[in-house]
Structures are given as C-alpha cells and as structure tokens.
Image 1 (cartoon, helix red, strand yellow):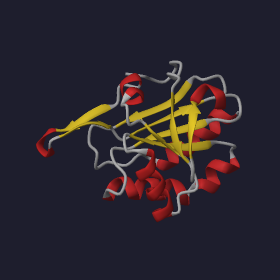
Image 2 (tube, one colour; image 1 turned 120 degrees about the vertical axis):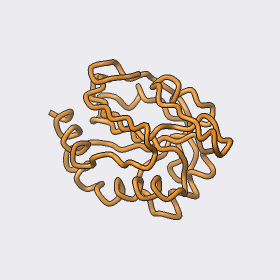
Image 3 (cartoon, one colour; image 1 turned 135 degrees about the vertical axis):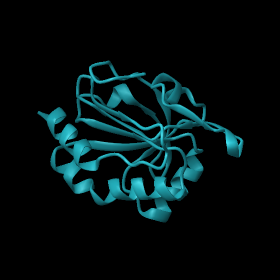
Image 4 (spheres, one colour; image 1 turned 30 degrees about the vertical axis):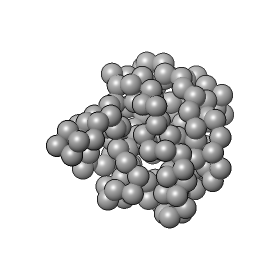
Length: 159
C-alpha cells in the first residue's frame, strides 16, 4: 500500500471537469499540494456526502493553495453528471480501467452485491515534489475521512 513518505504513483486517466480531458498527475505537481480523494461510487449516499463536504470546504483548500481531485472507477460521463447534479467545482478522475486503484493499492469488492474492483474510501495528500505527505485508507466504505486532518495536511504540504 502507498504510504506517507512514498512517491505518489503517477497516472494518466480521463478527468471529468465539465469536459472530459486527459489528466496526468505528474503534470500538475509543483503547482500546489494535491488532494486525491478516492471514493467507491458516484451518486451513492456516503460518496455523495463526502464529495459535497469537499465542495463545501473548498475555500479552506483554496486558502492554502491545495487542489482537490476526486477519483472513482465510474465512467467520466457519469462523473460529469455527478459533478453537475451536486455542483462539484473540482475535477473527478475516472479510473474506469482500475489502474490507479491498483497502483495505490486501494481496491475493494462488494462481493455480496456482485460488484468488484471499486476504490476504497481513501485520501492522499501529495506535495509539490510528488511525495505523499498524508494517507488515510478505510476498509469500511461507510466511514468518511477526517476533513480537518486532510485540510491540516494540505496546509502543511503547502509550506
């Protein structure tokens, strides 16, 4: 599993940001700290609450110069609809190929529902040099991250 102090695995995948464009993590390093918020599935209750909390806390992340990105295995088309429906002002990376959740070792299954290969709810803060300065991974998809801890980690990474 990727941990604090590791280099963030680089990736290129589609990002839903109103349009659908390629997004490469390494091309955005050096600009500001990056918060990668992995979630199991769009338009589910806890995932919606989590992404809306990031939306509502966006001013705090902007104040420290951090950029938030959601990540899910949903298609970029459904992620754009999700963004529109909940007025999410940040991009959401589509890991439909499930390569990013594999690289970050945050894959889980909902075997009882017959759904395999979704992201564990997890958050990584990546500093300008590409180092992971904060990591949180939950095996329980019903648990949300400690948003204040994420904000503090983003502020620390900005220094």
